[in-house]
Length: 263
Length: 229
Image (cartoon, rainbow over all chains, first blue to last red; front, top):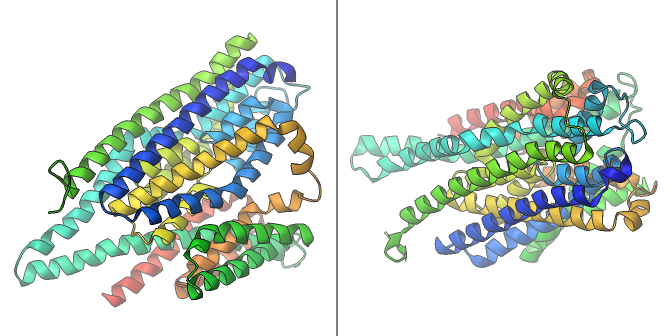
């Protein structure tokens, strides 16, 4: 069965979809770069955005590749390759594939028990379960982002009007506009806090409540990458090495991951 | 108003750009969606067994509903962070929490743009497109070299490194975000630590706890804002 799941036809089907998504990314990237230049953004800053995003994404991508390897033993290589290149999420794929294997009656997810029908059903379920973000994006992205934008332009509009009342209004609403930026930062701080809290909880109560015998590696990794990030930021700011900003996250992550091996 | 090209001013240019983004975004999302749903049937036809729709429906009820709810939350929370173009791309390419959102936030820091501005929309789109392309290239190269790479990537020595990609990422980003917002970060950090210490089984549901944690942080940020203005 694994031989059939690794056949050239499957590579062709999955590869074609991945190629389409890659072309989509290139088109979006070129359009955004041109638009940025046209509205007067500094091209060097735009290029730095691209460089930093690329270096930033390299190590997590290698982690995702491990997901492909992990699933390739039971689902062949082409399908996990597709799933993790397009809308997939590392933590999601294995969980859904396991549940689907149970539902189709093959028990555990394994190459020995895999049948053609089980495979096509698992593949369908993996697509259906995670497609809702795309469905919502398809139907509501325009309306949602337009509403957010019109709220901001409403807030900027009255500034041009004269008179004390409209100036007060403009001040209040401009405060609202800049709060949107603060809210985004706060939401992201909430996201980081949830993950850091889970590492602390895992260590303190992971092996029995308040036993302090859980896995300490994630906390140490966090600390190392945080300290290295601090050092790199200080060098970039004090020595005016702006180029370093593009690589600081990737280098900090590398230091944290190296610490995990050494610990 | 400053002219950009052929008598078109900045506002008109951006309106045209946004219209184009939505047309392109919708088209590419629809095609990808159709391809992803069609692929299992196409593969099934090739293997000689189409998907069992009854079993798929049963499994969807047991696991899929949770992901559906979380997809709604992700769409509502992350679209304002990503903007229109970034939103379309991020939902097509996935790995939002562990890669695309931190990547877009990092790009925003580097470019110094504010949420909700056209500049931020452009930076976000650039960063997510670049990030997605790196993932596609790394996975393609990895799949092409799977046989020689497998022993290296799956070696016991390197296993802890790859098990800790997310802690390494959030460790670095915590410095970037906490150093300028220490007071704001203290409460959600404390709250989440207490929750996970008291109920350690929730560690498998961390992504669901982002919502209350984010709500607390936004609430505190709002209170701070009210005091200043």
